Length: 298
Ligand code: GDP
Picture 1: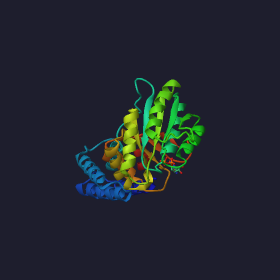
Picture 2: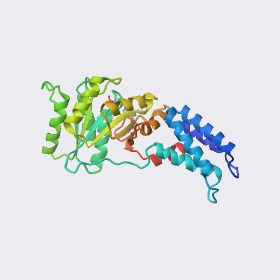
Picture 3: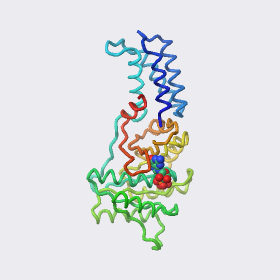
């Protein structure tokens, strides 16, 4: 996903090799190149501006180092700034003091929520938990069935209204599921909610109602990293409409430029907690800002 950005940055740093000391002109030229590389990668403009300002300031103020040559010093600064915009430290899931921990997923239709629900459940099960998936997306035809299929593949229990039971209220389903989880001694409940193709008031309200009914310990906003700048506007809309604690990036295996995804953490002030990079249930892991920065820098 970040191949072009990586190549661009590598070319920029190559120009600095062999320099004994960086002049202000070198720093300006490098900052310009990095700016172009980030904008080309679709990173949001305000994020790019802050990033460049920090790099420039730190590069100017950098002590002449015995251990690092100027190029290495700039790479180190860029690396650290990338880690910062990606959220700094890795943030782990927050578990409830009294089980079950409730994790609610929100995001647009097609973002990959249902798939992610299965991935997260499988990952948690592998780490010794007994998660239960909850089908509170009663909007999209087949969403319940899709979650059941995903649950089966992940080997985890799915709580869903019986077909033909007439239960069409996702808020009730979500609420009842908590009781059921307690009864069946699941320590984690993952609630899949309905999305729409675009941001819409009714969907937001429903997600907010589900939130109020289940008081989640974590609300995760799931966003397709391929949707470009819309990732930032969508994230902002969900932050205002529902609120969320963490971000999950999906489809990092795609060939989009990915920079918008790099902007979400910074713009919303919420950390990226997981990344999804394929359709298979195992194509998923906790997100580590430092590892992602290293990957971008090659
Ligand atoms: P939802 O509407 O938010 O529940 O989205 P789905 O879970 O149904 O996913 C929408 C489509 O994206 C499906 O075809 C998934 O197989 C696909 N998908 C989900 N996550 C990923 C991913 O990380 N990489 C790729 N390539 N496809 C994904």
